[in-house]
Image (cartoon, rainbow, N blue to C red; front, side, top):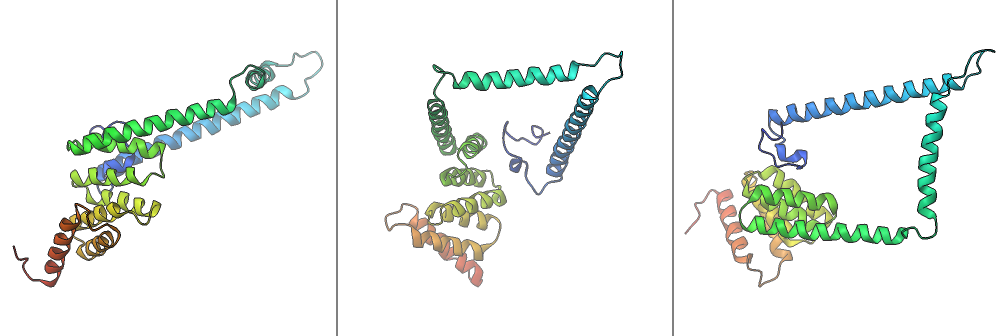
Length: 236
């Protein structure tokens, strides 16, 4: 269903567009499937527990005890316990070394996916860029730069409401992040909320440096928005 809506693979549900009926239909189907899976898992667990209790009950003289369920529990105990024991035997891979390796692999993937997203963003391949930045956010959710670039990719796709949410998330992670407020202002302009856009752009100008290459563009946008709110036509 997500594919029919043009959503890239392995993208979060926000990419479906929260204002569409297709979004609610798709997420409703996903929610129903998850609910049925939980019901099935709970029912299976209850039946298994009931069978185990039945097998452990005393049997009448002359009848054979059903040992299948105790045998299953014993096997699982031996497998899990044996694995934990082997993990702690001398000569096993050091736990700290494994954790370090996992962190290094995660950091490497974050760097690679972030650079891929930047390249796609500059090439105006916004959907591919968004997919890359979503993966970065999954691996490093506290990285404001990934939220910001995902927001700019959404602006390129003219999905301003979703871009607004990403920029607000970035400002929550790092309050004094200038380009997050710049993107937030552009998103609010796309949503026709000029007062909010003016406030966000003023914050950007307050935080950014005098030599920022986007400063003049921000000042021009701020002037145009104020003129638009005052009802005066913007002068060329």
